[in-house]
Image (cartoon, rainbow, N blue to C red; front, side, top):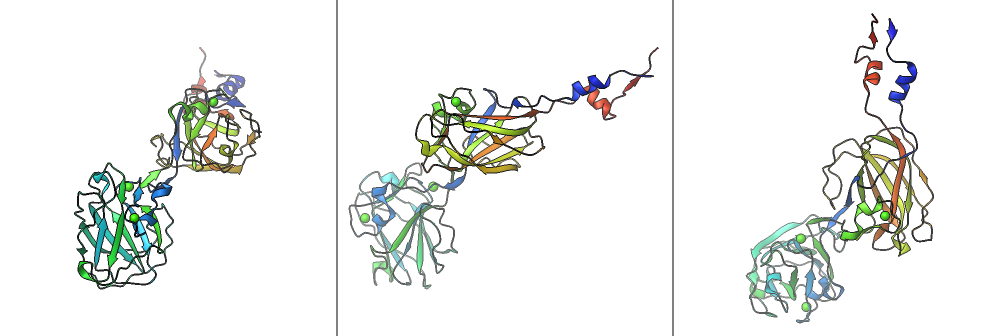
Length: 362
Ligand SMILES: [Ca+2]
Ligand SMILES: [Ca+2]
Ligand SMILES: [Ca+2]
């Protein structure tokens, strides 16, 4: 009886190439970013404009339906009716279905957040039936409510055209039905914007997508408008690998966009996360997090970052969690160093006892 394969052959069959570049132009790569609220507004059309008593200023929210505002009057109140005033243009932007909530919790929701940090009680939900005429005050809308609240959340659940942005010139609550009693809201009240709809922050220009980070060209870059907490998921074409380090290259401009902190994850799941999603459709295992020191030069390589760990993964996720302070995030290149794990050969399987290893020579 004789071994068909020599020990050397077995080692060659099982051996892996160390110190290889794991990323190749053309590898599957998608942009990802963290989920936040859809809420945002132009600086000149902030939520304060809806309670400023000025009938020619409006609050506009790009978040469309399910946006609105949270307002905290100077004292607690029992609201029993509401009056709206339409804005200057685009009737499709007017709220249609509106829900008014109350809370006595302190407001900890942030401006342009999802507005859900507090325990909210629904006071009333109704079709506001706003007039089509512009800059026009609505008839009062009554609701049955005997409960006193310290803050209110007014949600534009639907709009006359849900594909449009949301806007409103003025809004007032009254302590009596039919717009009677005292007005509850004043221009000095604390007011913030919200949108309960979530939105992934990831978004990139067509010529600066994530594939440009692995194209081997330091003159092209990956830019994400979402800023920090965006990144990418890449699936090296060479198969499963163990990463041992990575090197990045700065973009052509704006050093404030350079990544300076990261979290690296691996998975062996098939990638089902969509482009510009939050990248959480897979089970991710954190490999390493750390800080980076971007070089001041443009199109210049960072020092290489060592990665420790011995687990092989088929895909990697790289989150940029810090940059130089810019609203955008970018880098020209990234390359992973590591070792591809070869597919098990028949000799390897034989070693594992899965195939007959000995053959009788005649
Ligand atoms: Ca106004
Ligand atoms: Ca929305
Ligand atoms: Ca590039």
